[in-house]
Length: 553
Image (cartoon, rainbow, N blue to C red; front, side):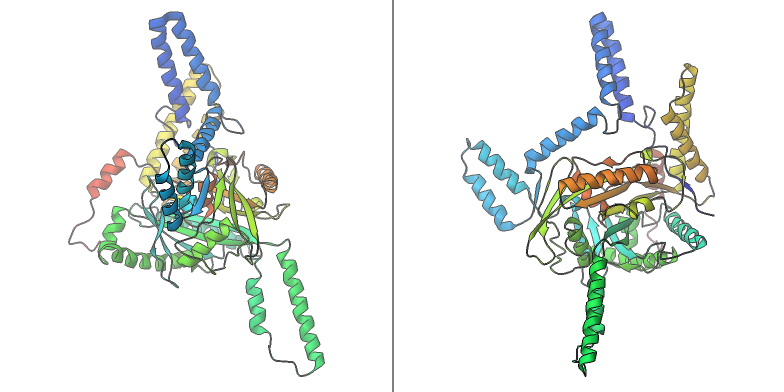
């Protein structure tokens, strides 16, 4: 029997002000209080102004297919701020160019404001990392060894990440029992890392759909075809026919053929548990590296046991090549030529709806331009019906166009106690909202009813002794095209397929964030914040301490 899961019905935990849209409710409550105070002091004038303000708040925060008026205003404001900072541009950092621009800025007179602003923008565009990988470095970038990423994005908890290429759960013709076993194996892997003392806290499955790369097949032919001259003309003619036939086959494979490449990135936050465990293995970074080596070996075994097939850990250079390919798909994903672990950003620009990258063709003989657009897949935009583990297949296969795309689902695991406490609170708040509406003689809000159903399912799944834990997730999909017109067509096709076959009410395009949003579908675990921990849980963690000095761990 297929594994069934329920993902839709709610977009977030409930706020202090009730419901899932806490900002809107807070603004309405504050507006109502201001109206009451204004009425007391200014009578009819205060009441009229207050009602007008409430109407503006209500209308500007109504959610539509293109977001609310307030959200659209925020997007325009962000683009204006970005234009003032760097003009929406990114250029790989160059010290000589930075020094030249700095000297030029210093030489300008104070009244040359326009020229100074433009030069400052050009200098701000020089950065060591592309927007999608801001704050990324390496704990270990040794050639031939697992690449251990070290991330310290502004405002977030630093973390380490490692990426594996896997075969995936479904390989060729498989029985339904084998597929269900693989789904259960993946679920068990996540559940095993839900406990608060587990070091690995995040998992990001990622699938890249791209044209077939025939480099491996060409290399196979080069390795297996006899290079010596044939003994006679008949053998020479037969070899030529064989090579021509094989070349024709590869040409057909390159045209109109898409393949899937599957990856899993695992995240280790730099928590007190991590640093305490690392301290037993050595001081500072030496201890971190030794602990990570042990964790990587263990995770490789666990991925294979979870029915992911062969799990091949990527080196730092392979990850850099992957990111270069994601920005410029004309470059093969496995090409390590000129891949530099310190310089993996390509010159790009951003407008409201696109991340535009200017790179070189496969042979490097011409300039190419790629347009990227990323959307978020959130639970609140999914139909709340049951789903099997294959619910995303309509976006992975069978599209009417050969669209280069990447789908990623970063997940952060939440210990059972914390997740169950949140589910209980959500049930109480949704139940109270529905009861209040019924008491007022109103029909219950459908959003609240859907949220209550989802919260009850979470509460049931997380019952004590179930062995289950919470899982905060968000999905991302990035589409790539050669032109703006082609990208618009691809977005329409994918939106239609998502609505008709994948049960998604809408894709939330991350406009005004597109250059940074591209990184959400790179194998670096971006696009999700650490879950909020309640004050009670923080107090319990503080009481637990970091362990006895005499203890082994």
